[in-house]
Length: 81
Image (cartoon, rainbow, N blue to C red; front, side, top):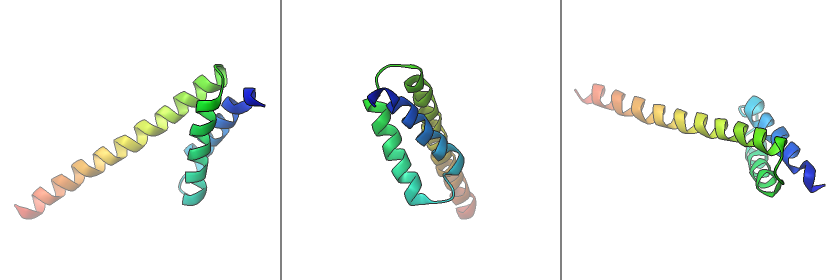
């Protein structure tokens, strides 16, 4: 069963990638299970691919947060000038 953990992680991470806007609680649960299965999975192709997908999701989330902070600071400076 443990050899399929990488596949489970890939499935959960693809669920987050495509359906993250619909249900917040399911997305949080899927994110938890994706990281859990990824850490517990043995080395293999599914672990590498799911790690890449989770890494891309992390970069997207961090990028959105950074862009939102920069845009907020820019709007604030425009508002007070």
